[in-house]
Amino acid sequence: MPRSPSIDTKYWPHKKYFEVYHRSMENPEGFWAEEAYKLPWFKTWDKVLDWKPPFARWFVGGQLNASYICVDQHVKTWRKSKVAIYWEGEPGDTRVLSYSTLHREVNRFASVLKNIGIKRGDKVALYLPMIPELPIFMLACGRIGAVHTVIFSGFSAQALADRINDIGAKILITADGSFRRGKLLNLKEIADETVKFTPTIKKVLVVKRTGSGVSMKEGRDLWLDDLLGEAEAHVPPEPMESTDPLYILYTSGTTGKPKGIVHSTGGYLVYNHAAYKWVFDIKEESVYWCTADVGWVTGHSSIVYAPLSHGAAIVMYEGAPDYPGIDRWWDIIEKYGVTIFYTSPTAIRLFMKYGADWLKKYNLSTLELLGSVGEAINPEAWLWYYRNIGEERCPIVDTWWQTETGGIMISATPGIEQLPLKPGSTGLPLPGIEAMVVDENGEPSLTSEKGYLVINKPWPGMLLTIYGNPERYAEAYWRKFPGQFYTGDYATKDSDGYFWVLGRADEVLKVAGHRIGTIELENAAISHPAVAEAAVVGKTDPVKGETIVTFAILREGFEASPTLEQEIKKHYRRVIGPVAIPEEVYFVNRLPKTRSGKIMRRVLKAVASDTDIGDVTTLEDEASVEEVRKAYEELKKGL
Ligand code: PRX
Image (cartoon, rainbow, N blue to C red; front, side, top):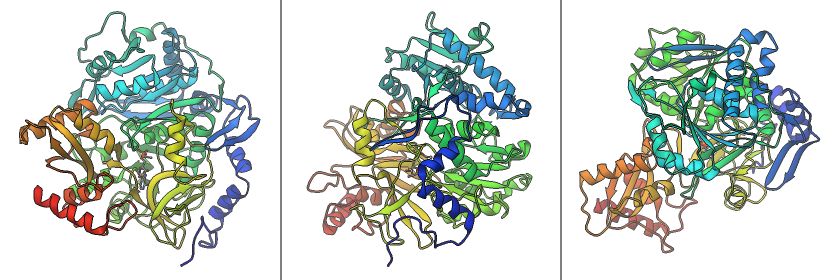
């Protein structure tokens, strides 16, 4: 079979995509400079790329400002009266912000930050629900050169404190609460618990969302509304170096400690601006809705920075997709005339479960393009999405990317040219992205042979480093295959050059699209007094893709019981948050291990999912076939 090193232009004769891709490979720096010129810079760069492997610095010497790009440039044009954000709260309340309103608010929020002592380079922690104040604060941070870290509101006080302490954030911004599935979620209470353990946090700024009474600590807690009264109407955007960090976002890896992924200002914005156009074919009249939470990278790039850099109108929704009914999202699409809809396979599978009748009373004819992100979309879900939501009219862009990549890397690119789609495949790499599937030795895999997905060249959206730990950055992404960025995913590439991402090759789970490390989960389990040892695996789930299953060995003196199982689940909620609650906790006497002491996770996974152990000769096994089978039988018997 032929070896296929990268994408080969002979596969598809369509001209435009290959012309652009080819150009990007021939002269990457010239290509990216051309893209960079599409953004307004205060000062252009001296050097496009400074590549000292594994550290890439883009547009060195260039100066720009994220809030200027996302807001100011638009208010200088007719777009000042264009809608920037259509926001809908879960209870049905709405807010519409034009670009000029957004501009005014970003300035006032920036002034508030300055007035409480936040300066360029300071770290600001944002623990907010999906309300307009979240993107406004992100942009306000960017305006004054402060670095934001958004922590998803599904994380607990302890998880929040760990992240704050890792970067030494000066201020925590939260809300009095949020609405979720009709209930009040009291974020302020969690913030209060957090700040007991975060010595660097001097002030807690509170946004009023629910109006539910919260306790405010004199001298530490401040209502945003009170400070806005004193705010200046204009704060000049700070000229930031292209290589200055724009934000830090935590994600899970293969160790217990989440990684603070640091993204640059210039490279990140240039990459996202370009990728967004290629993938979503954004037009002036588009109404774009990405259903992700801003707490994840999808929300950063695909709700805030990329669409706003284009002056697009976005929809933002606070609550649960199935509240008060399973048709909530379709109602929103009809109401705002959404043209581009971007969601996750998990959500699609949830809707599939309820059937297409729910859709009948809605007019979804405004939709032009659909997107999918977060995990592989199975062909059944793809087809359901295509037929029922897209009414066989809208192409689906299945976008592969990661927190680390900053922006979309592999996807269909209707903004350049619509190539044939294959349900379940993410398609071809974006221009400038040299993606490959390699074997254990870093050699290109055979066509359609499973291997590791790697990226050969640096790209502008690439992370700068892991905060405070450049060594871990080099180790996690560049050591396995020297000179190639290791994504941690398995993939295949077919004879047309299309990529099929098969899931994580490392110990990271994807639960309803949320990324969470098994070691982090195991550490949480063993911090419970009853648990001596624990192993965590993902169990295949028809809706969530994977759910968390914990195998636990109890300490002497503790008895397995349903009450203990509940208690351990609650413990997970306390330590990490609701995102980490296992579906099941199995109590076992022994964990299957290889001779070198490595837990045989595939054995656990097969037992948890009640599937056969299957092909035991895959890349991750270091035990013999017999050993794996024996361990599997023993464990099954023991349960
Ligand atoms: O395993 C891949 C999966 O999500 C991982 C990245 O997770 P995170 O950093 O949380 O970012 C998610 C959203 C950008 C990847 O390593 N993944 C993401 N998109 C896809 C995917 N797997 C298959 N197909 C996708 N479209």
